[in-house]
Amino acid sequence: MRTPAALAGALVLGNSLRVSESLIRRCAADGRRVFFDPTAFDWVRVLEADWRTIRGELDRVLEDRARIPNFQDISEEQRSVTQDDRWKVFVFSVFGTRIAENCARCPRTARLLDNIPGLCNAMFSILAPGKRIPEHRGPYAGLLRYHLALKVPAAAHQCRIRVNGIDRHWKEGSTMIFDDAYPHSVANETDEERVVLFADFERPLGNILGAVNRVALAALARSPLARRPIELLANGER
Image (tube, rainbow, N blue to C red):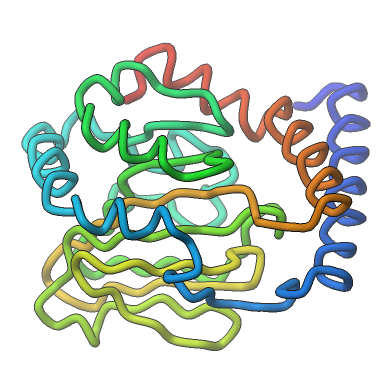
């Protein structure tokens, strides 16, 4: 049970995020954009050019699946959308805190992630055959989400993400960038797993909005949303 101080802190954070998100939606040039053109981000080319190396490190991680935690075991907030063992994550970074052991196991991936300006969270997101993730939304529009497709089922048209009513499909070696603060769901209706390199990064904004956004992100990084996963990962949940 949360203490009164923790509840008060969560309320203050929630209000701050809502105010900041409202400013982004109303004032940023792309504040209501859902999907973004990957070619607008120079660093995307760097990661796509080396995607097979990242895939090789992923394949070695997948050899020891018993060590890969379920997403809800790392982040309590995910329990509302997943309760089984069919969505696993291998985490590199949580709100800017690197998970040193995992980065050491995938050194090239970790170095490539350093190319993403304002990187907050990064992981391999592993979706088992038949897994569905119901509609939900991310915590805050001041982040954008990046997917680099590493393993895509042969029946790619049966494996999709729907963001704000728009369906997209992954292609190995290619990028998808979207605003995950919009409602989104995922379905892998195939008999193969789907894996992406998943990252959240600071949304590019102008000087004033950018400063407001960085304050909000710093508050998020100090919140239980970030601190609980970091503690779990530091204590051996890899």
